[in-house]
Image (cartoon, rainbow, N blue to C red; front, side, top):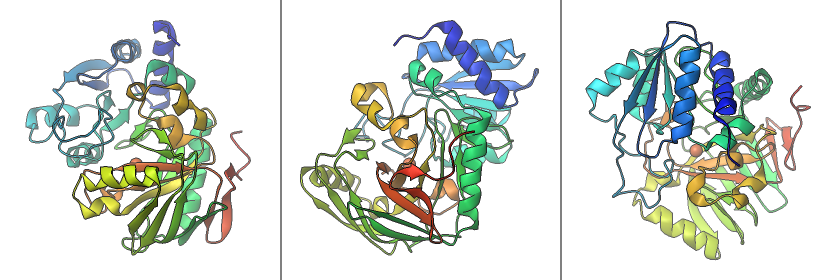
Length: 347
Ligand SMILES: [Fe+2]
């Protein structure tokens, strides 16, 4: 559905207000060839309306010859900032970077954040952005879940489909994603609404059953058959099943990188304005699938890197897989029971 400029500008103003943008601060809007023009306009006008000094930094895209799809989250390699000292300097000198390009999990991004610059990623189309404008209540809820993760020594996940996963915790901090950047050095993604962490290096074990109707990203497909992952010493050592398992296996093998099979982030969705069914309504080119990642009550796990949390693993391969109908436990206490979050919801 089309969105009016007024509505999208208002949405950005709300996000910038939650992000504590102050008059006189410098906002740099990072763009590339796939940036949505209306989102760029709205982000620019909203930033100016709040008295910010606004720059635009437009960088040419990279990785086209390596990635097998057009999804910006599918291939995590070099970025347009790699070796680009002038661009990095501009971003480091900014109070807030609005990333309308997708600068994800790169060493350059981590370096920029260390200097106190905030980065907010926003690349979903305008109608998804206005539906998922974040709120204070989102932050409260996600931070409460992250606090539970921080105190836990183990996350376990079971499901009627057959998932039985054990992830010792404590090596990595939890991460809260609630859609705005209210602290110096914070990165977030609009839309989101989930809490996550990473299993201790090399310690996740068990079995993950991706059931019919569960979603593979960046494939952006609902599985039509079960995929069974055997998890040993932190890695998916077998990926078995029918045609969906074949598709996943062949795609992952194309990276020729054993680190792509590591269990990466684990957590659960807390965003009631995101929906499991949304992906079925969109052409794959039109979304990166944040509804699937954030819908309330999913168990979202990932295969790939852990450098986002300070780990050493970098790999170009990154698969996100939200599962329905799981029970997620921290130290034996249910946080999500059969796909329903037990925290009482957003107040
Ligand atoms: Fe991920």
